[in-house]
Amino acid sequence: MRAIEITRFGAPEVLQPVERPEPVPAAGELLIAVQASGVNRPDVLQRKGLYPSPPGASDLPGLEVAGIVAGGAPAELAAAGLAVGDAVCALVAGGGYAERCAAPIGQCLPLPAGLTMVEAASLPETFFTVWQNVFEIARLQPGETLLVHGGSSGIGVAAIQMAKALGSRVIVTAGSDEKCAACVALGADHAINYRTQDFA
Ligand SMILES: NC(=O)c1ccc[n+]([C@@H]2O[C@H](COP(=O)([O-])OP(=O)(O)OC[C@H]3O[C@@H](n4cnc5c(N)ncnc54)[C@H](OP(=O)(O)O)[C@@H]3O)[C@@H](O)[C@H]2O)c1
Image: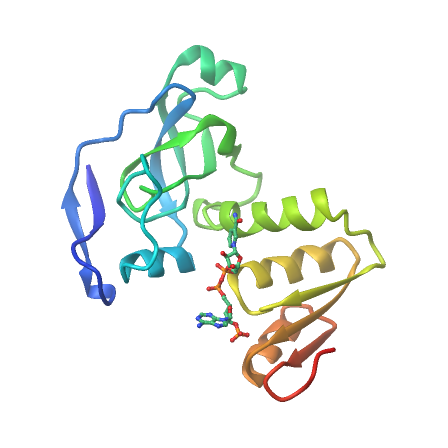
């Protein structure tokens, strides 16, 4: 398969297309024929040599993908309500920048109706993370206020949009007026440039 490899640590030019063997899904994993892969800050840090892949994970970058289920143990797929040919997006520990990627079945989500592969590939890292932390754990309610530090980060822009969609008030902090304006354009009710104002 074709994959994008970090040939050495450095600038974006160190990312190069290479041929790699297809990953073999382990127990509890399925194989995805990747159509889109998200780009996140950890990919950049990994490329610079500041974020080693976890033990046992692919050394290829890419932590979220969308594509078509291309393999896996039939019984395990069936138990998860999945089958070869289904469209999914998935959170992975590495290996997303490739034509085939192994993913834990429990970290796969059927492609949401109406989303393209590119859109769905942007869900797992940020939208899943915000969903779990802000809504499942913190249980933000409509009408409550959410303070988002780093409002223009990947996590921040997801948090703004999700909290506004669910009827909460959103206040963000960010490191420049331009970033604050971008947060307001995304729906934030109020944005504070923490370099020029005391948010407390
Ligand atoms: N599954 C998970 O648990 C999970 C998943 C994703 C992310 N995260 C965590 O969530 C946080 C945000 O992640 P992200 O991917 O959304 O980050 P990101 O897009 O890279 O944004 C990071 C933000 O941090 C601020 N920042 C301050 N100092 C910085 C520096 N030296 N270099 C770069 N940015 C700096 C910047 O905003 P200002 O200029 O406004 O300060 C920037 O927008 C991270 O701590 C990450 O580890 C956790």
